[in-house]
Length: 105
Image (cartoon, rainbow, N blue to C red; front, top):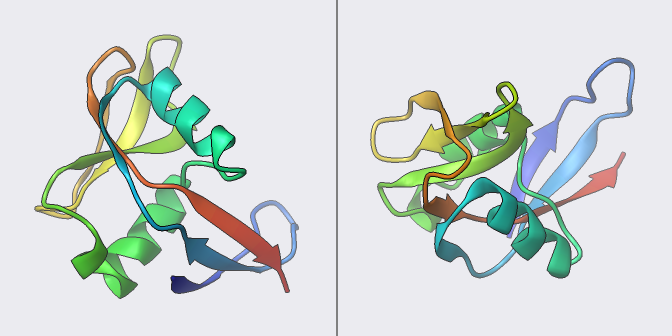
């Protein structure tokens, strides 16, 4: 599902963001990353999660979803799709995940 355009970071080109069908539940951050990679995709960045929250909120449960970004040696960032907040949590915490693909513009 098309989510919109995301600006490229650090001089990278802007990209179209596509949300893949399906999700996974009760997975650690490492398992979420592996699940997305097995789909030929990645977890969204924090900025991409904000875009997904703005443009496709109906595609998410009101739960915590992992991002691709680490927040230190034992933590990673995620997006709360119930309240819109972004939080760092222990990577051993079990959350949800959705996968995305990017197409450079």
